[in-house]
Length: 222
Image 1 (cartoon, rainbow, N blue to C red):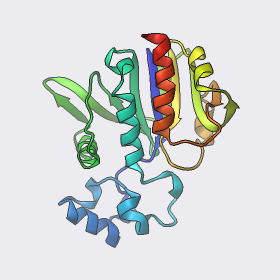
Image 2 (tube, one colour):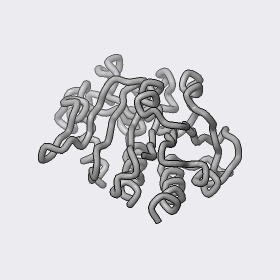
Image 3 (cartoon, rainbow, N blue to C red):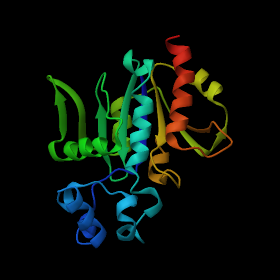
Image 4 (cartoon, helix red, strand yellow):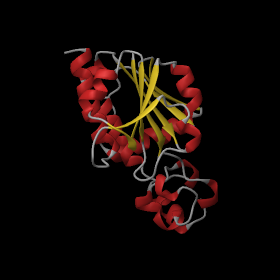
């Protein structure tokens, strides 16, 4: 089974130290929720986020939404050849179940994820769609137990989508950053067998995911 991990993702609830900031309380009122119940989003919370640790890698749940739509809307996923996980910047892991049709609306997506944080599990007709657990990236990769783990980064060894797909087998774990700027944390790089750059331009995660998985799909199921 091919595994995709969207790692160090800019997806988290608003941290406690920001709960009283005007931009946070205003957005919480707008959605009729508590500050502790909403996702950190730079579009709403830019002022509150100024100067926080790892600022450039946080507050972009929209990137995770785009990436999941790309990964979970293709034959490779629907034919049960792909496992999908989201590892967050604060070391939580969201596991995506089988045949999950995620909301295309960003507003509905954030509502679903906020509910997931509250309930730890989303079910429908006794099928588990999403779960969330405290888990580091290292623990997740150990749980997946792949034969090889390949990270995709603009700082990696130069390659191409086609060459990468030729290296991928059914027990490979692909790791793609779920953040807009920056690089993987050093503590997580030790879990990668290799790091590859598949494009000469630094592209957003969902673009890389769509192109890489298409090449893998041609080899695995076409």
